[in-house]
Image 1 (cartoon, rainbow, N blue to C red):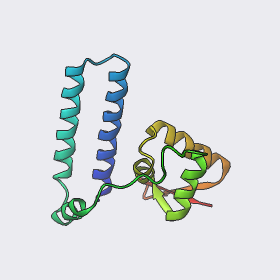
Image 2: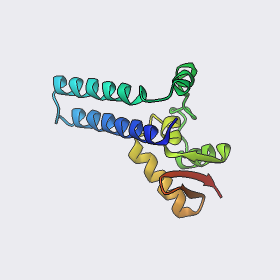
Image 3: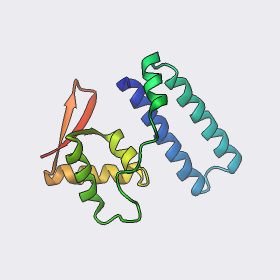
Image 4: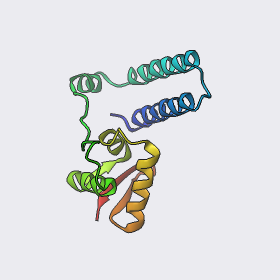
Length: 136
């Protein structure tokens, strides 16, 4: 998938996550919340429609990614994220978010920053616009 489209989809997902928090905190009533969710889904559809035909076929044939771990057996999530990165050699934030989707993006970012600080993983920046992580 084109990196820019992937980034847009990630930002739309962030807005969707934010809307759920805003709704749970009482900042949005149900009608506004549902209207916003509908608009975000339509925007995602428009962005995905910009993919080349071969990418659309790949996207349609792909099944929903399964979580990397069972959320009922959390244990040390930081170690589980590290194991996920080690297993895949190089991994993007989006792949981590999808694998651990029962966690908030904010929590995942904190775990990633902690792993970076500990020296367990390394950040790789490609062409100043794509970031990957790999285990040390």
